[in-house]
Image 1 (cartoon, rainbow, N blue to C red):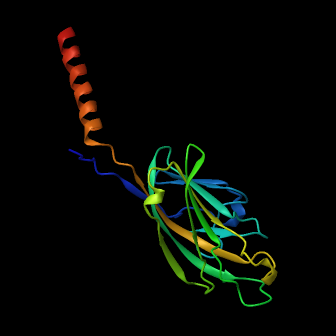
Image 2 (cartoon, one colour):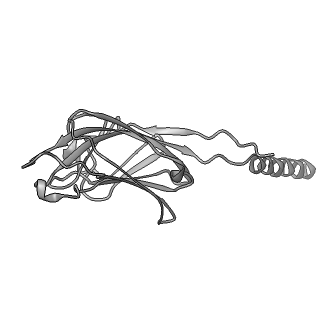
Length: 191
């Protein structure tokens, strides 16, 4: 029998994230900690979202999400702010890298293409490769063909990163309840 305890899921919405002037490198909300890999965390155009930039500004190009335990990464929402300082039409490229880690070892990865349309909302759902991880990193990479632009090329606002705890097997819960029961019986015998 393979019953599982229902898992919690929670979302970091960046609702209290300060603007770019705060020089913040870590932010925690709803049990999820977001840490900037380089640069700072903050909002740029939209309060309640984290701004990610590929270079040329003080904003971070990558954010790592942790909960202090194992989780499944469900998905996230990004709003493209387009490409800036282009000398030619923007390149279409898989310039968003999403990676999952366990104990510091890379176990999952996927690439997505940032829309070149400013204001386009992209809802990214992550697959089964991002289950049972302890860190999730979302990065914005330079376009592959960097001859088309000067940095920064692309940037987006990140929001609604949803993570779910890995459910405990029912047997683990039963073992915990049994241990608690034995402890109560032993305590009662002492009285």
